[in-house]
Image (cartoon, rainbow, N blue to C red; front, side, top):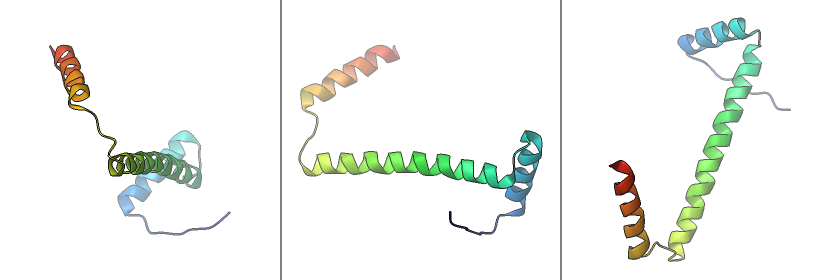
Length: 79
């Protein structure tokens, strides 16, 4: 396990302290949990964007017919 230190703005540190007291968790637990969630979400988004770029680079685009079909679906659902 690695150790990392960083500065927190006072407002964020106070919020973390209050949440730790309210939940009976440590500040370290809450910070690590928040960081895990953030990294998981960002990793998923980056991977999805990279796949989309690879598809675009390969020329894998929706046809005009496919786009029109999706647009009709959204238009119908919006009414």
